[in-house]
View 1 (cartoon, rainbow over the protein chains, first blue to last red):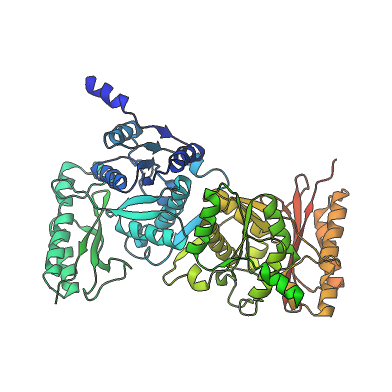
View 2: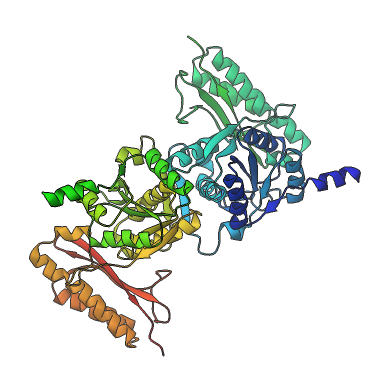
Length: 295
Length: 295
C-alpha cells in the first residue's frame, strides 16, 4: 500500500486534446525549454522507457503520447486485441520522469470527415511494407499529425522498428517538419529477445522458439563482419537456422543498406539484417546493424 | 527612368532557401508579429495582389512564395510553358507592400531522394480531380511543405481555385498544421473574366468567347437564387449557353455543396456553381457562390 501511494504522488500530468497539449508545450517553449517527444502505442516496456531516457538527454521536457492508431493496422491484424493498459503505462512513465502524457481518443485524432493520407515511397517498399499494405501510410499519417500537434524539437523512435524509423526520417525531411528524428537503440531482455508489446502474446514454449530470431541475426552479423562475402549463402544459412529452431513462418530475412534499405549484394557500406517471423499467431520483427569488414 | 529608379528602391527582399525563410520569419515571430503567407506560382496579376492585401489585413508581415510546382502538372499539361517572370512579379509585389519574397528552386523543394506524397480524398474527387489525375496530390504535397517551411499564422488561397481552397482547408485541419487558411475572393477583369495567369494564353477572339463563362455562371446563380428548383434544367441551360457562345469543350459544369463539394440535388445550403472549359488550347476554370433562396 505504501508503494502504491508513492506511485500515486508522482502521477504524470495527462492531456487528451490537441489544444491542451499545445497549451502545455507553448508554456515550455516560451520559457526557452527544448521539447522531446516519444510517440508510442502504449503497453509500455523497458524499451519504451529507454526512449524516454534518450529523449531526456536531448531535451528539457519530455512528452510521451499513447495512441493505438487504427490506421496502421490491417483488417486482419491485431488492432482489437492490441494491449491497452493506460493506468499501468502512466505509472511506468512516472518512474522515468515524463513531463506530460498525451493520450488522445480516436475521435480527437480522426474526427468525422478526416480525409488525408501521407505516403512515403522507396524505404517503405518490401520488408514489412510488402506484407502489411497500408501500414506505413497509417504510420506516416499519424506521425505527421502527432509531430505537428506536439511541435517538439526532437522525437525519438526505436530502431527495433527500423523500416519505420527510416520512413519517418524521410517523411520529416520531405515535408519540412521542424522536428529532428532520433533513433533509440533496441532494448533486449536478458535472453536476447527484442522488447515488444507483442511479446506478451507468446506462450512460454513459443518464447523459447522465438529466441532463435535474435540468435540467428547475431550469428549472421558475426559471419558477415568476419568477411564472408557470399551474402546469399549467409541468408540461406540464416533461414535454415530459423527453420531448424522451429520458426517455420519466415516472412522475410534480408540484408539491406542501412540508409536506403536497398538490397545489399556486396557489403561495402553500413547495412542491416532485418527479419519478420511468425511464432504461433504472433508476428515478431528484429534487426541488427552490420558494419562492413575492413578489406 | 525616374519611375524605374523609384521601383528599384522598394525592392522586396528575396530568399531562396528554407533556412533563410525560417530565419526571417523567426525574427518576426520573436518580435511578437503575426505572419501572413500567400503561396503562388508567379505570373502575378491583380488577383494575386488582392490576396497579398487580404493577408496584410490579417497579419503584421506578409510572405509571398513563387514556385511553379512540377508535381501539380500532368505530363501533358503546361508546366514548361507556364509563364515565369520573377523580376516583373517582384516589382508588382513591391507595389502592395510585401515583406518577403520566397522563391525556392525545384532542387530546394524536392531534393534527390524526395519520396513523400500527401493526398486528400473526398473534396478532391470529381471536378478538376477527375480530369487532372495527381493534380491535387501535387498541390497538397507542395502546400504542406510551404506551410511547414513558412510557419505562418495565416495563409491565403484564392476562391477562384475553389476545389483547391477546400482541399487545403481539409488538409490543414486533418494534419494539424498550425496555420489558418483564409479564402481570398475572386478578382475579375472589367469584362467579367476571372483573373488567371493562364488568361495570357488567350488570343483576342478567344477571350471574347471565354467571357461566356462568367456570363453563364452569373445567369445560373440568378436563376437558382430566384427559386428555380429544377437544378438539372439550370445545368442543361448553362451548358447550352456555353455551347452557343462557342465554348464547345465543357469539361464540367456543376452545382456542388459549398463545404463538402457533394453534388446538390436540392438547394437548401450554400452552394457553388463550378465550371472548367477549354477555349482553344487554354483551360479555364471559374466558380460562383449560390445562396439558397428563402422559401
